[in-house]
Length: 250
Image 1: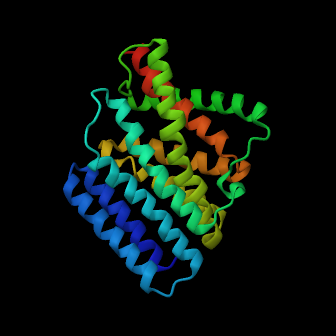
Image 2: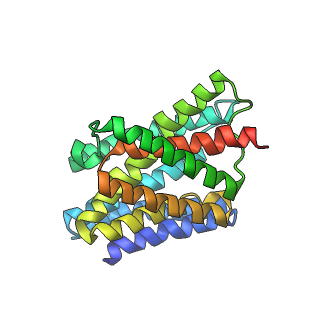
């Protein structure tokens, strides 16, 4: 792997590693330096277009972290804050997709076989949510289990968090890496980066679980190329772990 690729990746890992140890400002500083490094490489280096596309894709991870840390608190209900953080990310995601001319097929925008995929995705999501809660004893994102709360957390997970994270890590990063380094590297790297981006929770179990979860989702995406399928798995797992189970089993 070229140093122009692995240096920014190690930069992301180092920044998130600092945040794991609650060194937020130091980690943010490395992310900012890494961001400018990537821009410098894209503009001035002679790396191939496919490699520049990987670098541009990595910027989305850094931007997600910066937006997450810098977004002012507009809502008293914490979960609503995620609609702003993740909603804003649709803008750079659109520009990366447009700039790299990523097709709908590459993105996994495919609604065929949903009558098969959706029930399977919900089943897988429930199982993963149960495992996640068992490992992490997740804190509930809702105050109580009622229709309005379940609708709210479902919207946040299925419209904002799930789609944004899956488009970034699977539809964009995984497919960009795949073009240069092959399918296996793409699955492991995209899944690994997904896990690393949960380091700020300060829990090694969280990193290990989300890394494995990311690799599983990357493999499923590789096999199916179906974004709605993996978004449904992701959203269902989060609703189960951070909503239903966290509130029912306290």
